[in-house]
Image (cartoon, rainbow, N blue to C red; front, side, top):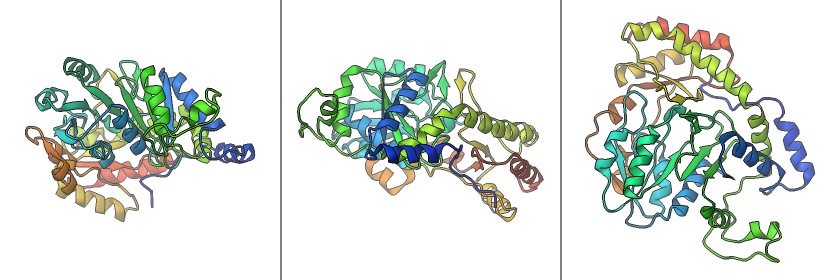
Amino acid sequence: MIDFNRPAFVGQELEYIKDAVHRGMLCGDGEYTKKCSAWMQERFQVNHVMLTTSCTHALEMAAYLADIRPGDEVIMPSYTFVSTADAFVLRGATIVFTDIRPDTMNMDEQLIEQAVTSKTKAIVPVHYAGVACEMDSIMRLAGKYGLKVIEDAAQGVDAFYKGKALGTIGDFGCYSFHETKNYTMGEGGALLFQKEEYLEKAEVLREKGTDRSKFFRGQVDKYRWVDYGSSYLPSELNAAYLFAQLEACDKINKKRMEIYEYYHRNLAVLAEEGRIEQPFVPGECIHNAHMYYIKVRDMEVRTRLIAYLRKKGICSVFHYVPLHSAPAGRRFGRFSGEDVYTTKESERLLRLPMFYNLEMEDVKQIVDAIVAFDEF
């Protein structure tokens, strides 16, 4: 069976984990946590990076730092993972879902303004498949209405919009290093932000409500409970694994792009015949080959194709069920305007195997199987 995903392994991870053990500090914010943060600060030109236990927790931190409160409204696409909404629901916000663009599967920037009310506090663009939302429009709108922008860049690590790293454009950016992502630490994430004004509050929040970070820097003689907080620090073992991946990011990206381009080039014949649609990347975006998907005519065709590929020993999967159609989505949110594309496009989309250690002969086998499928 050709797996849909396997977490990347480049060879240095175990040595770094062993080194972390020998250093004798495994609880977080040690040498490897600092190395990961510094690496991202330099590569993505961002002032502050805080490694977290998940992208979910990075989003929760962002919601707190953005001062989301009960009664506030937060605008986001319905086509996203539950964590995007959960982080703000936990703060008491109402989620206002918008429709997506059928070309990129990102929120339609032209529909955001009609969703804004006097209660709106933030916009949460989700960079689907590592392809940027139309951030210039979103930032202009946020400025017009005084809204925070929190980028869900879970899939957007090392992807760019007009030369800016995803996750560094809005007020906050949230990364994922889950095992399904390009660079992994098993479970993990990061919170990014530029403004100094958020730093002290973020440190306290991440350190269980204490000023422990100041204590370690020698700024206070003992640390105390000073505010609300939780435990968002990942283990040094996880950070050590991640650092090996970040060091090898160009090698990982090169291989993923090779797989992406092979899919795109060799499935183009089906797109030309109108049997599938392929991903679209706007000219101002540099994507990171996070995933390769195709769109077929409808859910029935997709179901048959998934079953056909499984019989061929190939695991392919669909993606999100739109949040506004879920029980919690109806309870905690509402859809702004008409669902023209969100449900229809989500039912057509099929994700193909994509991971660093995927062999190219397996990629060829996948393509050959899809091309031979005669029930589109």
